[in-house]
Amino acid sequence: MIIKNLLLPVLLFFSAGLYSQNVDSSAIANEYNRVVMDSTTGEDILIGLCTREALKDFPEYAEFWQKQYDTYEPYTEFLETLSDTLKKVKITIVMGTWCGDSKMQVPRFYRIMDELGIPDSSITLICVDRKKKAGGLNIEDYYVEWVPTFIFMKGKVELGRIVEAPSESLENDMSLILTQQ
Image 1: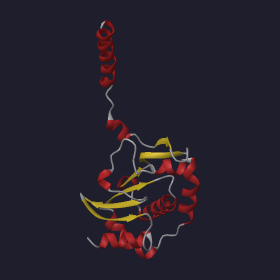
Image 2: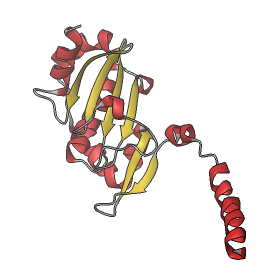
Image 3: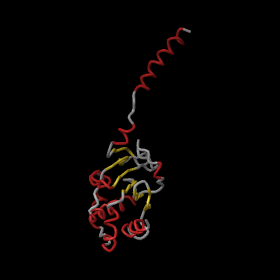
């Protein structure tokens, strides 16, 4: 009985300490370029909000980035039609640094954006693990099943998305999405 009477207050004391540690989920959500270990391969991956620079510098991704970015030749016939419309649109990219399609399509996409003069501030880049989770960042409202997913938004309205790989080309698919407004 004495042990029971002592054990309860001790357990309450230690458990109160656990609850008093306030985890700021917004701090996790606003942390950029987090590196975690991929539970499947044991390799490092980026997760959560990321920057273009992180992709270019991330050892497991940089080689693919440079090759795709440097060698991709955007279809200039679509660039003129995209420029003005894209300046009024916000784009969210959900990708995986472990994903072959992301390694190919995301650098190409950024090459197009650079050709058009679209600033990085118009683009939100979110990296996910193989379960399509972004660490402490909740992305359920994006309904992502495959990566990369490029989501084009005007205000709060989704104009369209390119999932995994474009049907024709990134430029053509973007043009179709943006002209169907």
